[in-house]
Image (tube, rainbow, N blue to C red):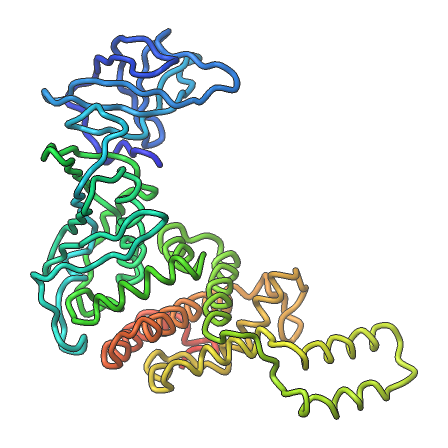
Length: 427
């Protein structure tokens, strides 16, 4: 994960370094910014061997503090330099273990405010618990009301990667809550001796520096006594519903072509629907399907295309279709929430399925013979409706109070519905 040039200011334009790994010689390097990345330009001081790792590790002193520099070999002006991926200001120990981490995130303060529809307020002085994740231990989280930073603590010293996994899951949850990118703006680690190390880099997204929305516009906040249950549910989803939480973050951080966003949203919806439905069950029982199958089997004189259609229909009777999964998912959310969101769910299901199938299978047309690739406004409407569906389903499954879900539905409908008043999906 990179270090972006815009997130760090070097104290001097030249840095003196000492090599801590193979492929580098001690010396001085000029700092060059290329494509929002910092490059250490030191002719003749970096080398590469085919088949060997490109990573190089250096030590330096910045503002009188020992600093570890980690980067990868990079060609600059026909010579090898080093593209900086990470700085650890305060220590040069690469394999250090830590007991706590404090991270600042964009928009966190607004997400930690309280509104009456969130239900009873939680005790802001009582630590939250982040469940174990990615073979790393569970951690305590200090998150006061209106906090601009979150502090994680572990019972025993653990590698930096264990804290990163927890912070990444929280960052995805914060992004889902705010419905906009929430970059990590700082990270300070503390080891068992009390030494603080400022880590720069190691973040897959650079800060967006977007304006902070008013708290009223957040889909959920972290100030109610439901917060621990929300965290438990999100961590479980991250572990069991891959790639739903990653898709949510990606749709907000790196939106792609509308068609790609529709398919990504469809993948998340299908994962949620499959998990909610549990054991797959066909739309009709064996007894209900039997007379239909007998009637289909009695047909004769069918050509190949008709026979294939009959076989497909019989298969649908014996399995759970994507349509039935989506319908079941919609029914898990109270009808008044859909009304507040302005999404006409019947129209959404019909058009969403046609678009999803048309894109996934490169089908040439949508309803009325119009090419799906030319229905840009309709696809945008489907994409935004998909986001509302994912949001309301997850809020319901995470146990957010009905009043808070209703408020989120209203805000989502206002935010997206006005964009698509000319399509049948939004009222």
